[in-house]
Image (tube, rainbow, N blue to C red; front, side, top):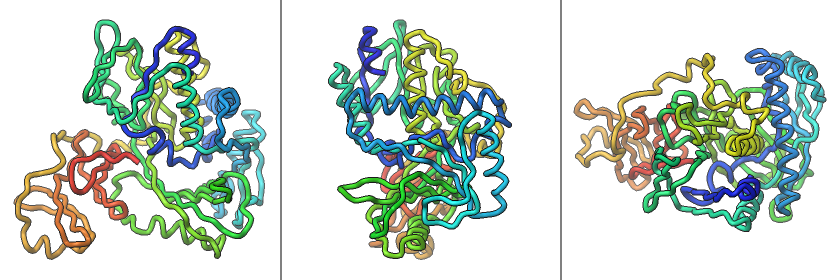
Length: 452
């Protein structure tokens, strides 16, 4: 994409809030695939057969595009073709597997119904997608960065963008110390940093997932696997420091959901031990993804009234392929070319929202600050709070978020999100205050955005 822009006389600047590929992109399981769960029957039923076929074709082309980029830019990132499977261990989902295979066959895709998979699991049935792919996401992204820099573009890390506004000649992008003037702007943040007029906070939510990496003396199979059951469990192997590890991901929930999270990693470890009793857990981490209400990414113009401002978001956990689709669509838009897939992912689309439950508690009064004035908490409130516990209490008619650390020190915050004022929930696994509306996360000590 950057090479195309340079050849057409564009100067390109990339602004990164933190470090490149150190959050969601770097923490992904990095499946490069058009297999997005049992999804194509949904697309045919909700949209049309031609829509589903275009979505499938766009993602299949993305796999080839990524391989071509890797070859062209000589990026060493462990790219490997793998088969992908959606499986079930429950008879009630057998018909769903069969219907998905039928839907894909109608789209002329060689999906296959199978009763066994290479993974060490007893299953009822599965759907097999041939010739999907995996890679090392950070190696790939850093390889792209080297290519971008070698092409004359600029990348600025630790440069947070606070706002983007129109001016007579295009747009002004505001950082802490600078203003950047440009004809076009692409907002490719995990969650769009501008609320209006795009209103993406009304059309998306965020979901957290948890991952462990295990090693075992047993031989690990190739392939990518994800269960039909909810919450789903995902498996894939990786090469890490001359050894083969398995990534096991799952435990997904909407960010800020009021549930006990303490056993999310323990549950994954139990699954690992049931399959490989000798396994050792080497790493564990969590990540967070944006999901649109109709399950299709938002790619293209940010708003109909803001030409040359573009957005790419809502990848629904399949960002490796979706981001390549986004790059090509937005490049074509900037160059004034048409793209055969732009209407499929149109960011300004206006369609009935099927998931109405996701609209609950989406807008409340904004607040200016997370941390509230210090005041003395009632003695009974402190005594009733367990060590390493956080919860919302009511004091003098006001709600206060309170956390007692392991040393007994008390931290108190205004439990309201600074984004649009939704009430925060305590995350007892990661010790953060999380927003159930839009996925913002805050440190328990002070105002601090935490994006996984």
